[in-house]
Each structure stands twice: as structure tokens, then as C-alpha cells.
Length: 250
Ligand code: PGA
Picture 1 (tube, rainbow, N blue to C red):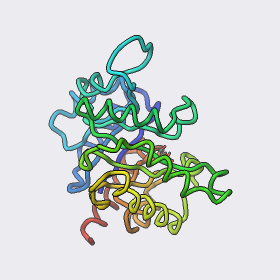
Picture 2 (picture 1 turned 45 degrees about the horizontal axis):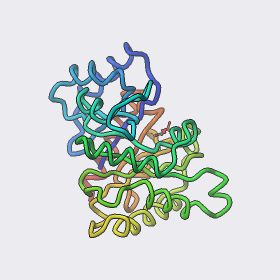
Picture 3 (picture 1 turned 45 degrees about the vertical axis):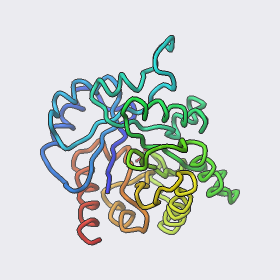
């Protein structure tokens, strides 16, 4: 089970220091915790965390190794600044920065080549779900966004219905299971010879302390990608605790 925090463009640097101190004060082993931080926070917070079990990640990287790309960061920069993983293809990147699945795959290749693991986000919009196209959209994103030769032990997938992100509206448990099963059955095809169970697929979209236990109990759900609730140490701790409880049952 993995519980990943997506801080997005939050919080203030002072608040980030307090948050990370609170998170590091507790252990939720064997649950794996990842914090996807705003890039300027990587160095100071990785220094502060030292040998902590908490992994740090970037929220995006460029598809090129280096060059004239004002405002962008490279995979190597993230790695050298304390990240061991990068979040790619988040719906806010796809919507606000026009990122296509082809671009996400190019970024993933770059990240993998520079020693970063990748968490690739997939998800349909409300219009696509209402048109009955949710599964087709997500599976197409999966096929294109994940490079064919991605080592299975360096890949994580986050299924995040766009309409559930930051809205307080969670996908129904039936819909989550159906999509996670569809992704799991597609993974061997997009990744030659790789067993689906080896690639963790986490759910994201309004995960909080109240709903995490029910979501984590579902088949083929290997944890969560948490936005808003990850900015509250107590709520995030409670979500991690739900993941740990689920692991002790299975
Ligand atoms: P949310 O965000 O938990 O605030 O819905 C999830 C995400 O965007 O990764």
C-alpha cells in the first residue's frame, strides 16, 4: 500500500516545515509514504527529513534532459535535489498545460533514464463518464502514457477521475473497482510480460480520513493519491493508518 501526498502549489514554506515534522514523527510501516512537493521545497525538506522512510517526489519534469526551457525542471535536477520519484500526467497538468499522453510518455522516459521512479495519473472528465466513455478514455491514456519498456518495479499508476479531484465528490466504490480492474487487466498488455499485480494502482480524488478505509479495502486498490487532505498532518496520518490496517488484514 502506498499513500502519496500531492501538495500541488501549497502550502507556505513555514507550514510545509511544520507539516513534514508532524508526518515524520510517526511511522506507518509497511505503508509507503510519498510526498510530491513543490519543487523549491525538495532540497530543504529532504535535508530536514534525512534518512526518513518518507520518499520525496517532484510534481512534473521536462521531457528533455536539459536546454532552453525557461521555468521547467529536468528529471536529473529533481533527482539531485532529493526526489526519487516524479508524478506525471496529473489532470491539472493535462488540462492547464495541454499535456497529452504522448508528452507524458516522453517525460516518463526521461525520468526513468535519470533514475526516478514514476507515478502516472489517468482519469476521465465528467463529460466522458456521462458519455459512457470513462473506461475507454482511461485505457487509452494508459496505453499511450506508459512507455512500453517501463520496468514494473519503477511504475505506479494513479486513477483519478477528474471530476472527483478537489470537489469532495468521490467515485462510487463500484466505479473505482471497475476502473482498477480494467487498468489491472490492461497492464500486462501495455507492459510486456509484466504481471499486473506488480504495478500498484492507487485511487485519487477527494480521499479523506472518513472514506479512505472503504476505498483501500477494494480489490486492486493499492493506496491513494491525496491532495487537500494531505495538507493536514492528522488527516493524512489517519489515511495512512487506514492503509496500514488494510495491509494487516490482507
Ligand atoms: P484531492 O486531490 O485529494 O484534493 O481531490 C487529489 C489529486 O489531485 O491528486
